[in-house]
Image 1 (spheres, rainbow, N blue to C red):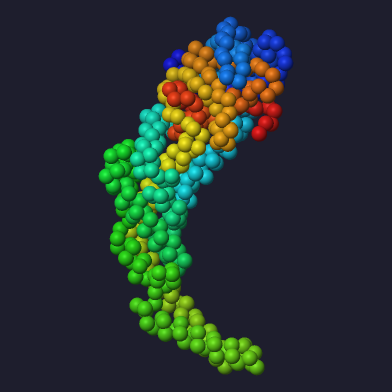
Image 2 (image 1 turned 45 degrees about the horizontal axis):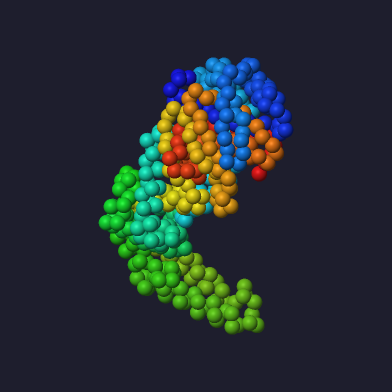
Length: 424
């Protein structure tokens, strides 16, 4: 790997030593590296960093073997070298990201966050940071307690499967028509909000990205089709199909007659077969009506799909802004040189509890490739290591960090974690 640290891997080790002296801690660190990387690690550089929760002795070993063998191999997969720890399970990442997902209001927004991966380009991360800041300004300007007051994401159902089925000559069900109508109306409201002067002024980057994702208004003709064929209560409107309404009325009359003839078994009643025939004719007629409605919807399905995906993207951005507000996060600087300069960094899950955890200061650059964290039980060693790994993942996914303003956390491509004590 080149010295510009375009690709950097973080190795987080929990040291199973509490009250030993500095030398013993480092030997364990060296032993762990030897068992993983197959090379003896020499400490030729020392650096003391302070923490608000106490002083930690941190050693920054600098050796080419560490770069090529354990962390910075430019050839082959990192998981081939240390497959046992090529994971992030010990970081509480799934718990942290689930909090972000839960902050999305629509099912399509939640699915977009679940299926979306980390961002590869720093420019994309910076752009996402910009949009979170713009949404923060919109919230303050509009005095919104929540973005759902302006965008109503909670009323947007995940109708992507329905639209795909209609596009492939499938037939929609009556209950799905009501879901489509509610979602279509809400998507038009989102479009109107995005076209407002307030959003254009305060959220230019958000508006641009929304348009890049084919953010379109739902065609008025689609809503017209749905309104013509549905009553206000969501039931199928049969006023335009008198013969079908007559079949329904006749079926209900026969059903009432049979029900009042209590002294005769239903199977032997002379009207039973006639009622069943009418029922089948009625169901077939309803199916034909639904098929025609599906054909009328099909031409507008692509535009509604585009609007749905654009709203899911917007909902995901609002979820990031909500989480940033909940944990008191600030926008970090991001680069590609392996630099970490954070002040008052807090574990995201602890910050979300609102308990004001003690923050830590951490400064690393491209010349510092490893850290040994020492201290007593309960001193925050594991929390600090997890925090660094979670910060790397949050940056990859375009989220602000719970640390002081002006902090810097560069983009890292891989996070390798081995937390051996099973802490929650």
